[in-house]
Length: 189
Image 1: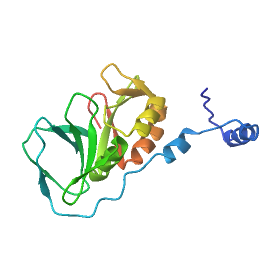
Image 2: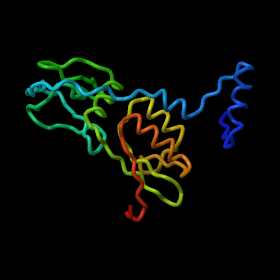
Image 3: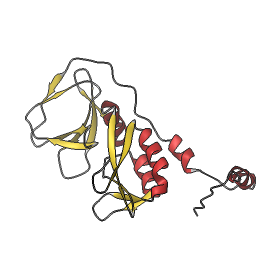
C-alpha cells in the first residue's frame, strides 16, 4: 500500500508505525540506498580485443546511456571499460576490461561501470502536459525497479511519470552521476 504524506507530521506517523512493527520505507531512503558507480579505473594502456567467431560485442555508450553493438573484427579497449558479450540468442555475458584480458562480471556491475565511464552524463526528460517522459535507457536492476515505482510504461517504450516525481527521478539518476534536464514537449528548453 502506498500513502503520500505531505506534511511535517509524517515523521511522527512513521515512528508510531515502526513502533508497532510495521516497516516504513520512504522513496528517498530507497534512492539513497541505490548503488553508485565505482571510482574510475586506473589508467592503463589501450589494447585490441578480437571477438571470437560468432561473438557479438557491445560497449556502453555515454551519449545514449545504453549498450551499442560494435560490428568490428577488433575493438580497442581500455582498462575499466565494460563490455556486453553475446554468442547465442540467450542472455548476454558481461565483462570488465583488465590490463591484458577480460574479467567476467555481473550485469549490474557492468551497468555501474558503464555509468562510471560515462561521467559526466546528461539525460533529457520531456515535460508534457500529461506528465514527464523518461527516455528508455539501460539501468542497473535496482535503479530500473525504483523508476518503475515512480512511473508507468509509455506506449513508445519510455516511462511516463507525474510532474511531482521530478525531484525523486533526478535523485535516482544522480546516484548514477547523471544530470537530468527538462525540455518542453515542443523542444524549447
